[in-house]
Image 1 (tube, one colour):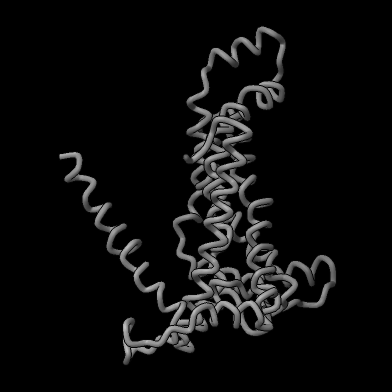
Image 2: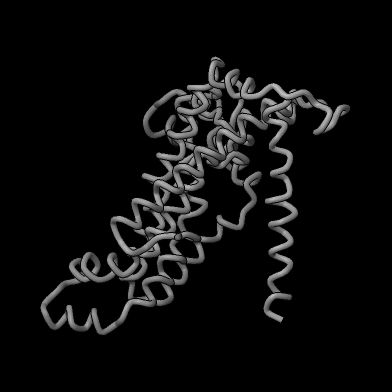
Amino acid sequence: MIYLMVSPVVLYYIIFQYGPMYGLQIAFKDYSPTLGFLGSPWVGFQHFIDFFNSYYFWRLLRNTLLLSLYSLIFAFPAGIILALLLNEVKSKVFKRSVQTITYMPHFVSLVVIVGILYDFTARDGMVNQILVSLFGIEPIAFMREAAWFRTLFIGSDIWQNVGWSSIIFLAAMSNIDPSLYEAAKMDGAGRFKQMFHITIPGIMPTVVILLILIIGKFMTVGEEKILLMYNSLTYETADVIGTYVYRKGILEANYSFSAAVGLFKALIAFTLLVIANGIARKVGDTKLW
């Protein structure tokens, strides 16, 4: 019965994850839908060479890595910090209220989130009205300024996901032995010392596992949200490998080239995942495999 229960998940991965790998061969072919997989001629690594030599290669790689790095530096610790603060709150009513308010945006559609961004940051939006009335600054078209894209992307990501990610760390904190805190109190340790010497070390295995998983997704950085947010004026800082694949593969029907770019992205992500897991295995006992 246990194998029967898990069979839908196994079938899902076979059909939708492993099955499509057969189509990766088009990255090495000049694929034509009329000729099919077998009839399309082989071109070897030509599509990869074209991508590496293209004008957009370094821009795409830079934007992808920078957005992922900023997300790792600012968005990932935000959930930990919120969880640590909530763990110190004694009022259950206040704690639950803050949790509810902070994790509700996680359930809001990305389309709605980006729509709110457009409304709030428009020239006649609330943000510009505050800047004009308080500081006398001229209205800024935030969503049309390439320099503001990364700030808006990371800031809205923190707002949407900080509450939800904090739940994971609060759950990890609930597994810490309460006797450790009692012993620390008897030794004269204050709240901050208890946090740094008991709470943070207690949740480190969870932090490391999530960090490895995030690094594994380093090359896949909110592509759906970027597609909704960016425009031709913000390509300089907003265009990433995933959005480039979408334009080349879906809009321009250049299937072989987009498959080659997507395969390159997947190989880099796999390499980063292996490296991150290897470092975690050498530094501590927490690892994926």
